[in-house]
Image (cartoon, rainbow, N blue to C red; front, top):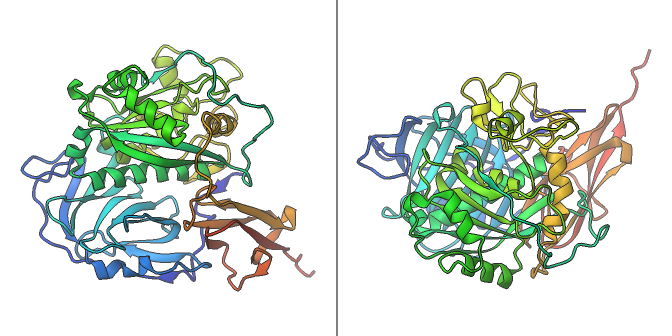
Length: 514
């Protein structure tokens, strides 16, 4: 049974914590990169500088409550209603930044992922992140030279540059795995998801482009959260965890060419990027290494290693380069890291780039029948008209506005699930404090559960679990660690401060009396 995103969302009794932020003077001619004094890019519809008031975010610093997901309203433009969402995921960073993601309860395909920088620290507060609403994006960009303020931009996604430029994959030769894989030792399942550790580097030019290190860090948070959201929504039981970030030395590469940077960072003998990346990977036990670079939008969105397929000898196919702009423009961090999972583009793009699509293969991205959306691994150029990305890997489970997001012959998600255990085994994890969430249905046939992001989780993270009743059943309540809960809505937010078990209770729908 395919699942509609709309049917999976309920928030009638969600808590309200509205954020009211004052609007300052609109910025005339603000560039897409966040600077001033330049003509705006054609995809920028309007811009304004906004002020963030610390008191509006104090509630994010309180001990989170479990139960009905919190509802929050984030600012759009003056006299607008703002964007109201119910919480999917929340995490408090050591520096006082709160990362918060959620979705519109009426249109769950519309989402927000935002870092409230400085929310729980002394000093100014600002926003960094993005709202995705149909063919519009609303981008929050912190202004380093104006503490407490940020630039809000409305983006027309149908006017963005193409989401792919040429071939963006390189397959490295097989090598001996640093941690030999033992078949059957680990299989990724919803109750035993694969935890993939990643080190993320960024260039000095990226800091210049985004304005500050804090802006770069929040862009990384956005990209990794969207990757994890895509995995969960596509029913891939895996999660990617940033174990360290660092700034590289200046690359010296003109226009930070993606192919050149990939060859540099993946070579341990390269003294500019590769040697440090190899040392970081070893020091933090990272399965993957990603580099964020200041690549012009008209040049490329990135490049990555593509194992064919991922396996016990592909640990050197673990590198990616992504342009900072493309992370928010078309979920490109999830695209490039998707290549590390062994995922391929849509069939049309594969053929256009000189590849083949043999009979019986299914590892391809997808363009919807109405040609208005494409999944993460597909290129927008595969659409017959202007289209925008949907933050999912092609799969056979979900619908978007009644449109399939894949089929049995085009199913990146199935291939990602098979690859996840291999990626998680590239290196031995050095993190030993993550906690697990066990999900169960009672009765088993009554329905299923899906988390907003799969674990294991860093302690203190909040995750929302959604119960979906099977035909003939209805949702009736929750148990957490065997204790019945008062909440009876099919969305439950749980704080992962320890290992927990959550059970969704279902009852059969009585047959009508005749």
